[in-house]
Image (tube, rainbow, N blue to C red; front, side, top):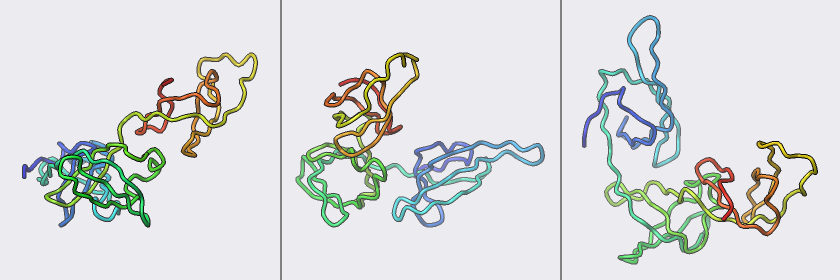
Length: 187
């Protein structure tokens, strides 16, 4: 595994630290007036989801782990566990539903997502960046509300609430960005 300096850590990097596998969630480079610069890194444990804030100086060396990414098809959910199948080998794996967090409602039956593996252990799952959903209900357009940045609340077919532009009505298909949980465009 390659060793990198503490100031080379970027969000999304997976590190081996304190005997565990950690994903860098947020990285702030700090240069105080006194003393050397450092990177303030928020880490999330890939095995149990715990969080850790750590400081890395540029002289600190950390192990960067490369995860193997494989496409998996979502089959069903059973007792809080999501069951996925490899389309090539037909092997099935289970991941806790909590791994997707607030993005869980966007996972649909038969959807292909990217699952990250370390050796043979499935650690993380990533939804496609854009998902098509249908607007179930939304407020009617208020006449005279033509400001470019005016949005109105809407409820999607999967129960998620988000803000949509005034021209979007009930029954319309829209594209949602799963990373920002925001309206992207009409489908």
